[in-house]
Length: 217
Image (cartoon, rainbow, N blue to C red; front, top):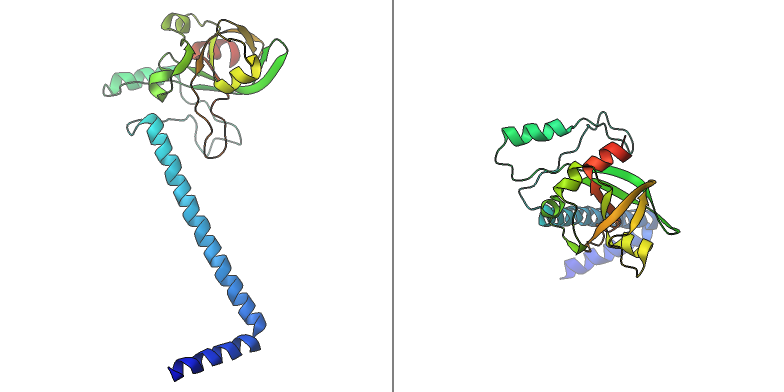
């Protein structure tokens, strides 16, 4: 016990004698603890995001993006996937239950009776609800005939509905998507935000054939 007390006294004397060294030592420990906490939080956040993705798509789903990191610049993605690739996948991998192409239109300008918003437009197939496990709460999804004939129809997210229509029923109304007249068929259910803060309800869905031929030309 006496030896322990002597060690404490010597330690106290050393701290008083080398104040600057003690300060930097404590600072180093603080930075070390803070760094470890950040790493642990980042790992937990990654796990949480991965679990959310699996919950939405299921453990048997795969997302394939066009281009590559070497070829892709900032906010750009080289279009290396075609509709023929989908047919090849369907033909050669019969175990695939569902394949859905997605075309992305960033910063699409949407108008309705003086209300203007900038949102994200997606060209998708009629199987969007099943593929993303994301269903409509109003109206209906566009059908295969509308997809084949490249009809100007769309489904909107709840945020878009709120910003454009407020309390007005949007079903059957005509909006402009990048100056393209488009009839609203339905409204998606609420999805909220991602861990990074992106609003998932801020979107418009259109037939991918319409997007390919009339918007992404």
